[in-house]
Image (tube, rainbow, N blue to C red; front, top):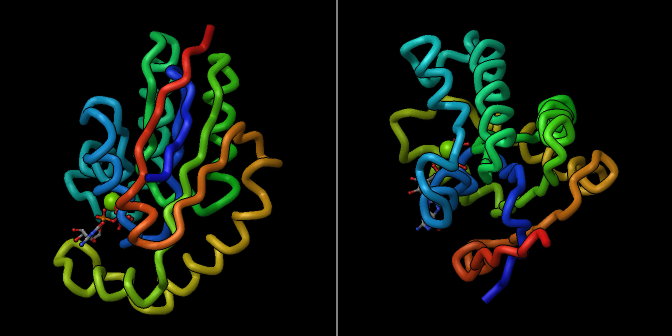
Length: 173
Ligand code: GTP
Ligand code: MG
């Protein structure tokens, strides 16, 4: 078992390529209402979870809701790839604005597995090159997360580690 210590009140950013299992992990470990998914917010603003042109508005809405939740003292999980520094910076900013600790959980699976999973999904149409770029972004993310302000960076490497992970909440006081 891999225990992931997380403050009772945190902004948790899942980080991983498409097909790494972020949404599955979120469903397993958190209540549905704790999870803000970029897909859901794209659907909300554009009636289409895959409409990438809606991403700007979708993330505006997601960040806004995250801020409201944190203001109310509710743990919040962001289910998005979070592979780009600017995407993560927005999350760190929202967390800091509410004096909440930002935490990252990185899901790192072999690229071939992510690709295999992607091919089995009707709701994902990106090509191999897009996945390869995400994988490169993930590699570059490693050295940066702590510097970007994430107070804890939990890295789960491979399916077994991801399967064996359990969340343990740390009391704040
Ligand atoms: P995006 O939303 O595209 O970024 O992907 P994601 O990281 O949310 O991946 P998701 O959780 O949707 O998982 C992708 C596929 O892999 C799904 O079909 C899952 O059923 C499968 N999958 C995810 N995690 C596991 C796992 O631990 N074991 C197995 N067997 N399948 C998994
Ligand atoms: Mg997902």
